[in-house]
Image (tube, rainbow, N blue to C red; front, side):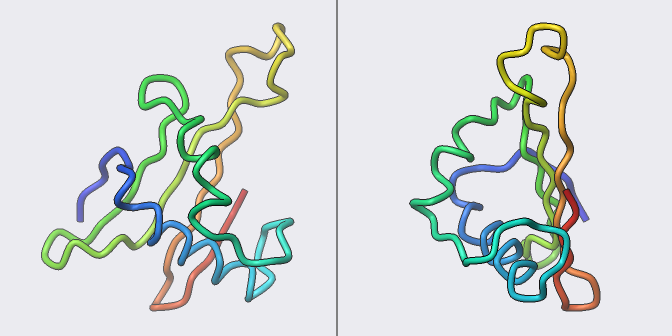
Length: 100
């Protein structure tokens, strides 16, 4: 197993995991599935240096089994500029779970 910074090519698998959490009604406030176009801005708002997205992948097959991201908490409020929100989602025994 390996953890690395997410790349653009990972976005479809990140969405697959997240959309399954929407279907299952687990820990997300989204109610409709998202597509790559819906998440482009989200993906690009995550700087690898300040608000990274990390993926966990199986070393042998390269399958992404989970991800987590740091996002600005209450963006624009200077007193909170060094505070981040942690979101994560992953597969658990071939089922997907999401936490935010």
